[in-house]
Length: 385
Image (cartoon, rainbow, N blue to C red; front, side, top):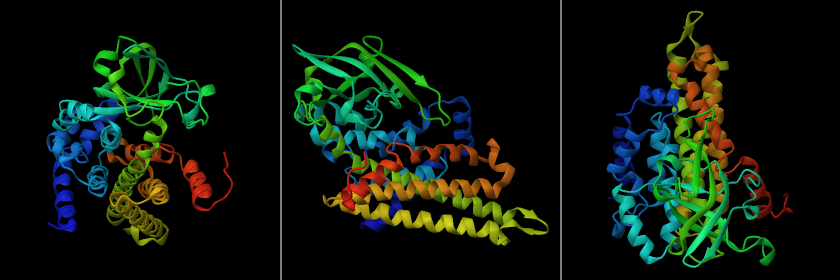
């Protein structure tokens, strides 16, 4: 089977699965701010959340390009892949840097759906994107680390069995470079919550299942250290390109959903005796949104191709995320404008998806930080922050 054949078959299969979870399913969850357990279970049972896990550990062994299709089609079908996307790119940290024992212990169970690895404790309320200045500490005491601190925007912690946590294991004043002294620990949430870890939900404008986490002398076995102590920041950065590419694919899916809904409505809605789509003031913004989404998709595929070849792709991955997030947000605005008042009505789902795609202007990396990266690392201008 060629890559093209695989991608066509994969798209069709994911679309069929998503068709079992129509707009009303997501609308109801949004109203209740509930987690899509049934949908995530269906994805897991179909093997899609194990897409990037090698076959030797029970996964599908697919490429990032392949995996991106899964997330794209979830959003293209009107769903919200944010409920489960993290398992794909968080798992990469364990796969690339975990010990052989850790991979044998966890990856097959994650692939089988027995365990969920959906949460990554990185951001803190006082440091934001300045990860090297994080305040959460993990102090080695015998065969354990004792963790103290706080994380915020730790999404899906209430619906995950495991969490990857980045914490400072060497005080900042004892390292030569600010990126040193950070380590990644694998936390078993089933044991930790209520025994040194408190998780509190944060209600947001979209149904995102995010939380804040408080660590109070939480004990984590030393054997749960992922990779080498002090190299956690490098491990974190190592997984960002895949994250950017996968999020870009989700935004492409969102953008296509908005364009298709706006196009259909513009053809059907008749005002002043003719379809509103016959008016250039309605037609042209939709057409421009379509162009932007398709252009962003080309950069997404370029970045994925480089990543899967093992070639440098930091610039392309960041540009793909920026372009796709911008395109989906503009398509969202166009859809609301096309629907007019009905764009704000819950029954049409435009306002729900509008809120969901707005997130990607800010997370998991803001558009301004991407521009700062491009300015410094691609164009060679002085560091701006």
